[in-house]
Length: 627
Image 1 (cartoon, helix red, strand yellow):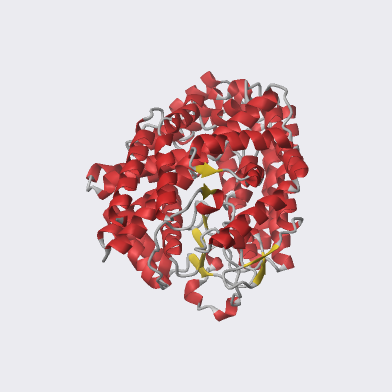
Image 2: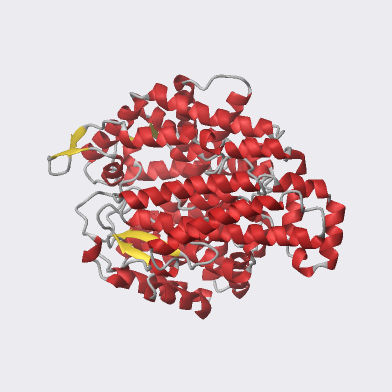
């Protein structure tokens, strides 16, 4: 997750991201879980690679606090000489790296057992420390701008160590018109925790204050519906179970429409506040300005997908035909169109399959995968009170760590490939870049992970032993594009609409928000989908709308990844080289320029067009195999 608006300084000079790098958890079906001591050590994290124990964490925490205090004494020194500027930037880098490591240890240890009060306390303290870091460094941007571009350029020309920061400086002065005075920057940084209130209230309300109904499962046994169980119930072959879960969940949210519309409206107002404070013309312009993404890229995604909605309409019609339904409802969109092989895949087998599939990326790539498996970078299995879902998370001073809740399903195997993609992106970046560029932009964040999925799926298709297995792979590929490109683009269009309405001074009422969402569902899915009234509220339960024009990056990343992955699978050696250049670039260039290293130009419709053309080919392949 990322902070609101532009904080103290661009790229690595923005600390709040460190406390929020772990992505949102994905839902899973609850079941009795073993305790940590019942799991073989090989399948559990070794956190001693970060700190040997909690005492070492505490010492590092205090060291960061001390460094923050001493760092503020550099205020007013940047214009004195090239040495002073270089030393301040280097100190800032080191401080950021140490803070990242502290946050990482606190977050990972908390996620292993979220019932432990001491771990929760460490995690909460790192949030506060990150906010303090943002405040303590908020003066740097305006002071650097006051030094002036001409003087800094002259210093960089004569100082190779300072010249490392050339892209950072260029990016800083690109944003100059939107940087405020030192006091104003400090006030915005101080407001960080207050500004996060709408998202915090939404999260706590939806996680703890909703009373979901009791429904009956496939065996007619009573079960309490939860958001976690809802995900698995939508895949149930029993349509009654799907319908009851779908309606039960959405009607629960519908009963709280006033609260949910108020929190979303408040979040949009927060976006408007930051955009106006920094003199942007719109929230969308503000959100895309920092990574230097033209608004035209966002608009291009929506307009290009709009030209291909006939394929999504065809998909809904295919569902209706294969599932033999009189009509398709929202609760019919996730159940498999054909039965997939029901196999339990041992974790070690999944790791071996994923590693073999990614051999096309070279021995250097697979060697790191084997190191990750052997050296306990991966916490594999669900355990009592462990965080749900999956993620990759690391710091500049450590290797990446992967959290899984592996259950042995085909989806779990794909998740493993996906998270390893994130980890390898971080690994190549850290090995190739100085601290200042040792992270990658949100716009690029899902590319490496999805490339791995594209490669794995093609490997599984080529090694399938029957048409049934091939159907399962193609079905996964279709659903991946449907849910990640098409659905997320629909979300992106919804986000654009609600911000435009608020910016025009119109209220975001529950009725309007629901009507606007219903209109988009009808547009995207076409006349073959029956829209139940309760579906209107879906837009109010999506947490990603609290992240300021974030969801579009899922769609653009997926299209870029399909473009890269399919060229790699086809044996294009240049595509492999380009992909590794992309993985290694970090934030040393602007996101669009980093993607260009991999041969992808997201300023044009071409990558999106190719993905949607492939979606059409997959539908045809699926129809042929299903006959």
